[in-house]
Length: 181
Image (cartoon, rainbow, N blue to C red; front, side):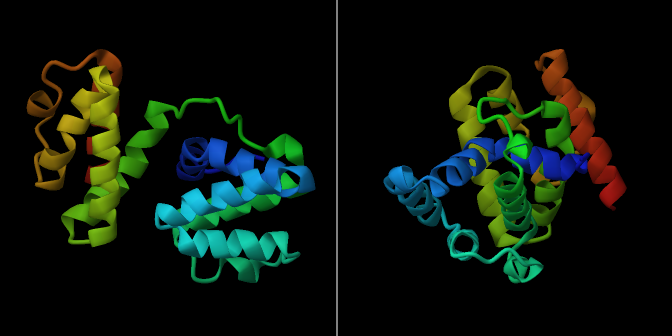
């Protein structure tokens, strides 16, 4: 099954969580690990997602379980349901997200943050902080998030000093932002 790029990116970003929930949730001997994963998710503000996961592991499998979830939570929930049905569909918990797939998702979050969406701004800020901590090319990418939110669209200014891969991500973000107008 081929998923849209945005869904694939969300699943890749959360692969370790999805994998951990499915594998530990099905094994009574790993119940403490399962509960720890849910506790960590709740601490990160994923209360709606955790509630949906609890309903899944209580036996619900219908589409109604997605009601009230945002796009990211719905994508994670669907991946968990697919993983329970067919473990071969579980994402590789050690795979790194493809930066090329990140551009449309980042552009969407940047656009939402720029239009005043507080949740998007918080998420983008947290992502930028994590990228800054990673250092190197990720720190360069993090440094252009605020200017992008503030409306900067000049690729020469934004990409100054970046390696070619990071520059491609920024150009992909700019391309996606131009389409969202």
